[in-house]
Image (cartoon, rainbow, N blue to C red; front, side, top):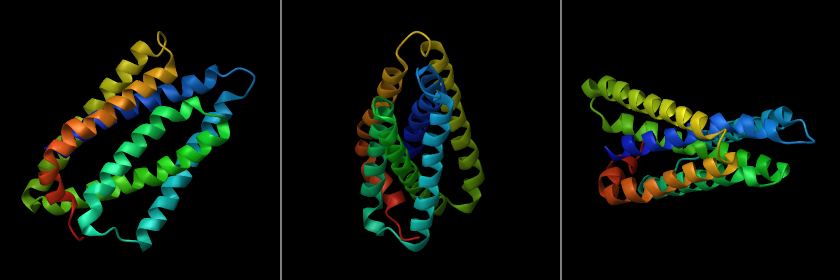
Length: 187
């Protein structure tokens, strides 16, 4: 299924980003990089809390969920791929927004796919989905470890998120009718 393979790619790239973020911040000279890392990642957590609260009170129109999800996926790719190139205060804003969008992505995918699956298939699908997500995460972490010491970290992160953005157009959009059928439901 297109959603599963897209999230495999997304988790692979996201694990590259998360694995290399701390080494990047530690490499900063003249500042306490670890403290900056904690504050920036804290902004992401606050964004997730805000995004979750917004979704508690606001329902996305069913017919627009697919397009909202595409926007969110692409926006997350650009934010995660670019935030390390910006000053600290902009990193905070980007990661706050990233957290808010991440909750939206999660909510649309989880609620829609769980609603779409028949009860007798849900456990098997969830097991397979989680295996692929974990496999993507492990591959991404191995890749990050292999290239993070050799290539510039910011560019490794940017390219990995660029690949994820490309996968929106290679995996999801060609399968949009099938994905819309899953995402565009009133739950």
